Image (tube, rainbow, N blue to C red; front, side, top):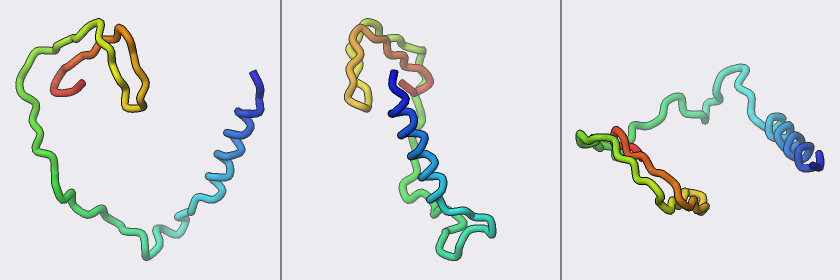
Length: 79
């Protein structure tokens, strides 16, 4: 394994940290102190149900990867 990708990643992280603003004196005047209220708050309430396991499924992830023969658990309104 080459150290070059690791050194490049570490160097990039150092550059990001050096370029990041510091707030030693507190936030600047143009930085909002509070977030605005959510304009469309979620009203989702999961329906009562038992945990459900789907086995031997083809699962597509959010990154476009594919998992063959995977399992999906549905529990408390979450996947």
